[in-house]
Length: 322
Ligand SMILES: NC(=O)c1ccc[n+]([C@@H]2O[C@H](COP(=O)([O-])OP(=O)(O)OC[C@H]3O[C@@H](n4cnc5c(N)ncnc54)[C@H](OP(=O)(O)O)[C@@H]3O)[C@@H](O)[C@H]2O)c1
Image (tube, rainbow, N blue to C red; front, side, top):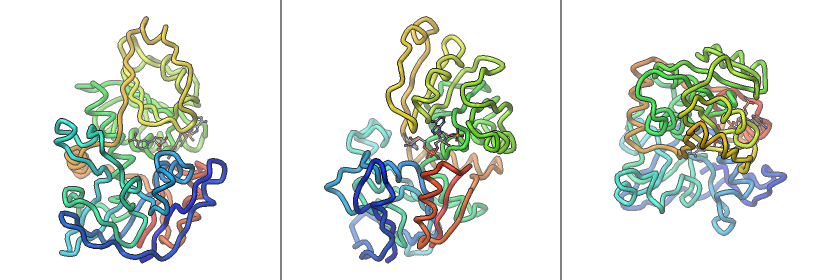
């Protein structure tokens, strides 16, 4: 079958290790199901893997990809849940299982004609969603949903700042935060992306680092070093930063004086549970919101999608179809 693999890793030239070619189809495994992929989506995670972050070199070659939607052998249409973990080992939450992995970290990923996943790792695809839309939600959208719900501490409508509006998680957070009833502020370095952010529901979009008209309850942070100081300054006393990524750097100054004087909380968040995926798909169906799909091309043309991902020249998801 055709698949997109990481054959070698390079921090400076991550795409040098990308291989699009034929590999054996996955062998049957008790308790696992075969998904015939119709569409798969890229995430920054795939670039990290090519750079050697989170994917040990002794597991190469590895089929990349966390996100997919497809059809089971019995014809059911499904969305793949990317977190492979045991809820019991995480106190009822598979994201807290110390042994949990994402597809493509230990088990072959979704950028292929077929992917094998544990039977609990598929959920029904909403019929109104296209294959490309359904493939866009398992990682970026689920991450944004958990950040805004379980991890944000928000119980009613609040004010939310989303940093780096163009990103996969960030653009999802803007749309989901509006659907959840919040007032949404966002930043982006790019005027076009700020315009796009307003078009999908942001109430206010400003340039990265620019002062906001008011302090916010919660910051959704995936950019890291480039926006961290602004995130701390944007919060009201007692506010929360929910952080799930650090694309621009992992180690910004902590500014502990601001954290304790203003009694801020810094909350980590990673992916989401199967039941959060089901809840989010129900919200998407109920509210009529849809993932923004920036680019769709065949699996065989994956290199061009990775080039777009690397340049950061996108608003929304990059999708490959089978
Ligand atoms: N923990 C988890 O479960 C989880 C899940 C998904 C993603 N992540 C992580 O979250 C991060 C974002 O992932 P993604 O897939 O959404 O990535 P992405 O689509 O590549 O988006 C990254 C965004 O960050 C902003 N950005 C990048 N460099 C910047 C800089 N120097 N200054 C200001 N803004 C900058 C850009 O926004 P603008 O161009 O609009 O300024 C860009 O669109 C990654 O680090 C990823 O590994 C974590």
